[in-house]
Image (cartoon, rainbow, N blue to C red; front, side, top):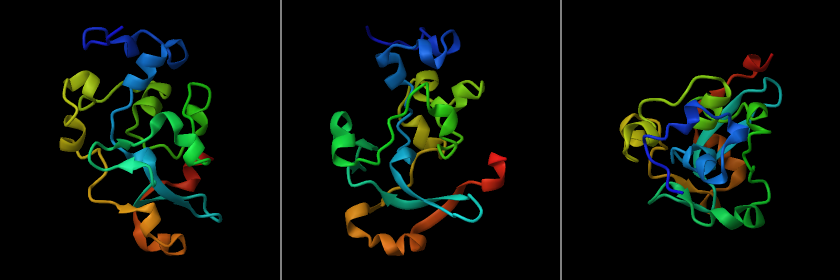
Length: 156
């Protein structure tokens, strides 16, 4: 089955009702889930860095070995309809999070706009170039913080 723009399945199905193909098509390709994050243990704040996972392909803003990513990166989270509501550190712009929160897809989402580059044009994609995980001393990760993704007090 090929997903077309006229399907608009995300408006009629819950995340749990989607096929595997529909689920994967929801990814907007922003690359933000592939960034290294830091969490402040005292405040619960989550900070986004400009350091990408070792499997991140900056040319296409996607995982270079998506099918086997958990074998190579054991901490890589498998996003699902069952856990999306628990993953508050996902970007607010994430299609999965938006739908789980009842907000619908943004107008810049490729399924709505029909263009993959609309994500970058809207400023929702990671800014390239990124530092690569294997090139950064993880003890220096604080030096690579670019923005706060989640305020810990928002979890209460």
